[in-house]
Image (tube, rainbow, N blue to C red; front, side):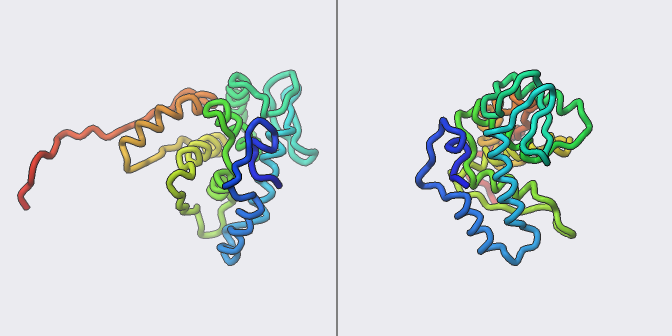
Length: 221
């Protein structure tokens, strides 16, 4: 398993400072091997399937296949892998997805979201970012509903959240609210993510705080 989706399919150099998928999974195992809510085998399988889906997934006559056991749904009567999809391909795929009731495979959803990220931002997400997303989307265990993650500054929180939102909304057919304590970041990210969200759907927006008063000078206790 390589280090970066963009390097696996070509067109994006590996980052020498990034840890390989094997290193990341090993660290997750070392830190969480007693946590039944985290399946390292599942994470490794999903990460590999996402890569294969981007690199080899082809569609024809509304169907394409990742491997014989996994059927994925396509959108056109021509064949090409997801890493060659255009913005129009993604929009057509998303429209067809919203019209169907059948569930989609997670690798397909995340693979298309990764392609949308590449078209909008010029890069594919790193393995560490994909593993963070997969952890949030992993099957829930009895009594456990989610994961709390701590993402360091500069590690791509915006990209992680945006990709998670797209996959979660499409997979579970729900509306998502992203909440942040920073009004400045909310404005910035809403603007910077317009192109990304626009590849998948058109109805994204933001709500921001509008203070009704300002504080000036010293206040008495």
